Amino acid sequence: MKTRGLSGALVLLTLSACGGRQTPTTTAAVGANGQTVTTAAGTAVNETANTRFNAAAALMRQHDEANGNRGDWAAETCNEVAGLFETAANAQANGNFPEAWFNRGLVYDRCGMTEPATTALNRALQVANGNYCRAKVQLGVMAYRRHDVPAARQAFEQAIQQDQTHCVEGYTNLAMVLREARPATPADWAPVVRNIRSALALDDRYLPARTQLALSYLQQAGDDPNSRMIFLAGLVCAQAAQVSQSQNAEISPDVRSFTADLYNTWGIIDIRRNEIIKALEHFRRAYTLNPNMFEAWVNYGTINLSFRGYQDAKEAFEHAIALKDDSYDAHIGLGVALRGLALTQPDAERAQTLARAQQEYERARTLDANRADAYYNLGVLNMNYLGGSIPVLRAARDLLQQFVQRAGSNARFVTSVENANRHIRNIGSTITALEAVGGGAAPAPATPDPATPATPATPATPATPATPATPATPAAAPAPVAPVAGQAPAAGASQ
Image (cartoon, rainbow, N blue to C red; front, side, top):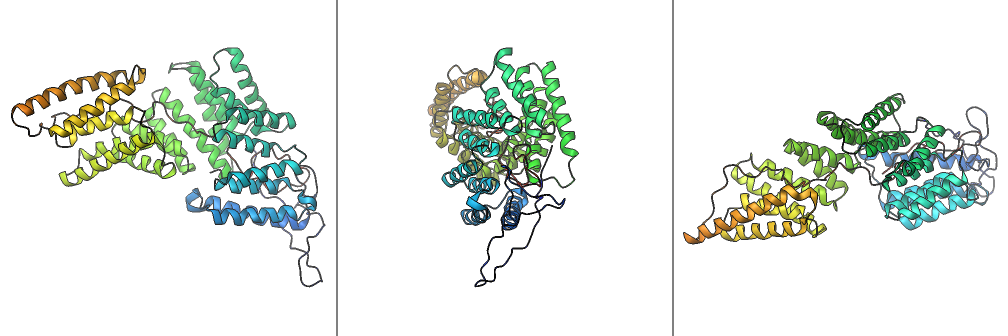
């Protein structure tokens, strides 16, 4: 993958003789190779703008890499760094510095400050005369995040139209959007493949494009673990991993993030091929490379639940919830892990762990009361683990009945609905027996339901990133001679 570092020369500001004030120099900045530093639009960058830009970019990267690459962005730091990029841009005549405005937009995006981010990105397009692939693509990324897929697709298409020979991010993200539309025929797949090939033709080391190629093969493989397509998907990942390993030992945050996406995809492919141990390792590599990658934590936790690795699953889902507290699946997964851990604990500790599991299920239910999973898990929890009194059993029966109602004819829940109906009948018989002898509690089952319910309490399929394949990365300092801004991502981490 091609990366571009901060290659503009760092030059001291020129001081004026009037009142001690600093006056931006109009002298063009010169790179280490003696060539003039220029913007994406080909305009020469003066020494003052170049120096200010490099200082802002260094600070941006510092915040990106803080906390073990988790970042430490807050409103105060976002405003500070965004202001530095604005100062760099305004050191150019008429603010003609697309990269500085672009990075200002990305900084605001780090903090979820959508309005100023959009304003800055549009300013980048304005000073580049509308022809700045990366700014247009980032506007598409933001539209995608707010689930406006038509607007995202339009932005990616416009970015490509404006710069067909360099916009690798545009081709990659357009391929992703088209792939997610579930193409069914060779004619439907043709534009997906064409856009991926266009991206790789521009940069055959661009990891997000290779990841999209692997996902395309995986999608075409369907449920057949022996499909030639799934073999090709794994091969693409293996080759892409070699590309990432050929980078410098100290890989930049953007390459690290792209590589994490790749390993997460590789883990999904492993699952389809029933290679669970390999999947665990690939998901672990993904969240190690990018600790902010929610999907990798969820997938790692889900696989551990499948063979009752409850402690590892618990830790993984706790990380996932720290990143995304509104994830239904992560709360359910954590509840299942806690319920499994409780089975091996002393009574006092077990009660606390089961109470935590119940809280996680209830949290999931508040996030989406219409989904069935939480009701099944709460029903089983009440039925087997909360004392067996008549009121508790009645609550369990009610929860299981609600599960059956919400599950309906969903194929995912067929076995669990059968189990729930059996539990409902057994609970009715138990309540009748208890009432006949004057109440009391039902004995704990000799073999309780497994801690991972038959209903897939965790995601039905491994999670793939809910963001475009090209994460938002800051623009590098302009390179000597007119750089092609869309040709490769530059230094900086995606959040």
